[in-house]
Length: 73
Length: 204
Image (cartoon, rainbow over all chains, first blue to last red):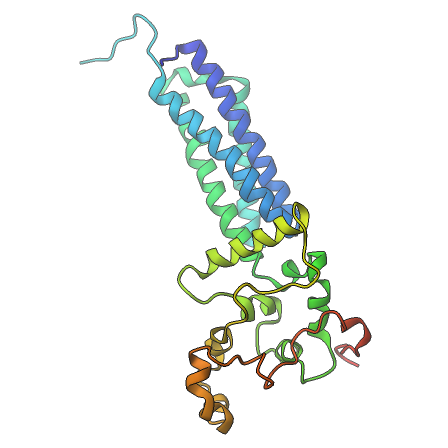
């Protein structure tokens, strides 16, 4: 499966959104001094941020150059 | 507090950069934009995860963290019992353990994978408390190990030269005989009775 430039922008948006949400969860967990804050960070925050990173990395592999764009040999 | 402030600053910076990419993903068309995306969506979030994990692990070792759970309230109160025969109170009040790491000092698993096992047990308790059926009394899986006492006491003169300890040393080290449940040091938390017992107030 390959994604074009427009698809890449959409994928970047999804990855960015997940990372922003995950980091907000991390800030909340740091401000809350309770065992549930640990669980919130470990089971929600890390998964959401990790998913954002994975989607971004996957997009690097799956992106296809637009027609006419050639690399210098 | 200093490291937490740095971590929060790093998180805020990452949120700002990721938000820029969220609003204008087209900036990644150029080489600078691609580099920015790599930093904002891979390097910095990974650092934030590592920093968050480290901070949460350190916080979970603090006494106030352990007793912030409702089920642990009476165990926390037992540290203030005005009776030196209670082992946790005696250790806590005389600073034989670090006061802000009192629970961790005596309940940590001092083995290679101990911290991971401790966190696993902690998460199990959270699950039982909020999603399962919490038991009326809290039991330590596998019982309290002498190794947790011996981590500090083994090799200490007062412990090693005590004639009773000398006679039982092999049984104690092999965990055959428990320090706390064999009639020797059996005054532990007594959490169910703690509200009816006299408390110590510093400075009084």
